[in-house]
Length: 525
Image 1 (tube, rainbow, N blue to C red):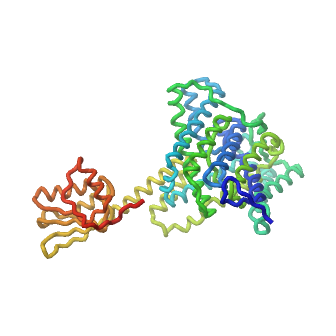
Image 2 (cartoon, helix red, strand yellow):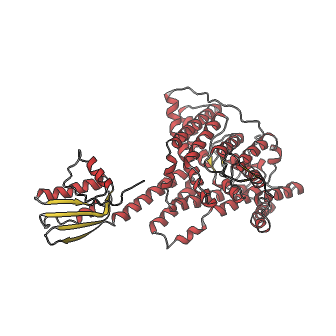
Image 3 (spheres, rainbow, N blue to C red):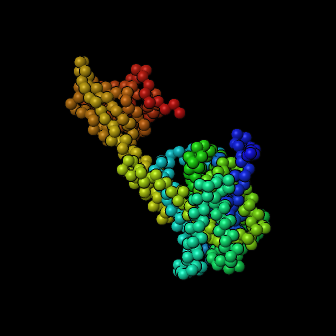
């Protein structure tokens, strides 16, 4: 019989066994990635591991999405490469310790910006990300996860592929891991298949003394994951405007990339678990975690879709799994480093391959020929930009911009006008579709000002004036009629449209407005 208890979420039932075992699996998967991401900008493995521990713990307790895992990420690590290059240009001969102080200060400032985003409730803007962009983001991320495993098939320190028995062993152990992860759930779901796969493959390698790439081999000579509790590291930098000018651009990028990746991951886990997290709460949690990471010798980070999917696919749905992962990671650092360093990379590569396969939205292929061409283009473009540049923020922002432009273009073509002259000789223009910056040209082309009768009615019962460009278009058309002595009535303007017209009176001249108490398309939100 399962035992349940509530942890920080009183409505959330928590299964001890599932959450703890899933957390252990996630902790094992966090180790090689945290090390790899720390090495990208040239940090020690412990800088990445400390960040993974702090972010996983804090966001699991405070975050807006139970079951989501955060840690050191490649997207954030790449940003520090640019910061380090700029520091070396500005300060030739700068000491590595000083560089780390700048990094920690950047992480702390990024955390402050993320908390501000949460307090200002900016997390809701993630809703503006269209579904094709989400598809592209997820697919691109799956490709990144998949491709990131390939260096493990090269000889250490070279660009030469493994050959002979070394390659066969690596491939065989990787395939065995994938088969266990795929096949075990068909037999039993008592324990996470990912954990079983890692334990079984590691047992085979260690028990039979098989020579293959291990976690220790991924580190530089002399480095280790052995350490203590994250040490306090108050950045020792001059508190000047010059220092602030150097770190603020990178802090802004770290904050933006971290929030975009975290909120998109939150949405994906929401869909998988059929629940809803809090974006604003996640912003505050990510910011708090990064501030603590900067003060405790960590390189910062954000949510990790790969580890989050490992966690949810193992059945974890509550905060306990993330807390367990963080605590186990610290245990590995303090007491189990020698054992963890012996883990075969083949087991972890196989695990991440399965994560990549599970992450990829295979259903997106079915959208070809069914979705609008613009949506397909956006999806493919975001996938390619994400996979090629690894810059998730740029890929998502470009996708949103292109989607918005495509939407505007399509809506611009929808403005129409039904024209007729009534028995009193009054010309009616019944407008259909939104009047906004993209449709103003087509709107003005609908009117035959010189040949229209002396009285004209423009009817907006089926339309809506959306912005100042629409207001300006109305002003211009009424001015054209006024110049030749013709009277124009604007009818059935919705309440918010009238508000726009009234607020524009100091800027433009608005002619006769009639509103026969009929309200259309008023935004009540």
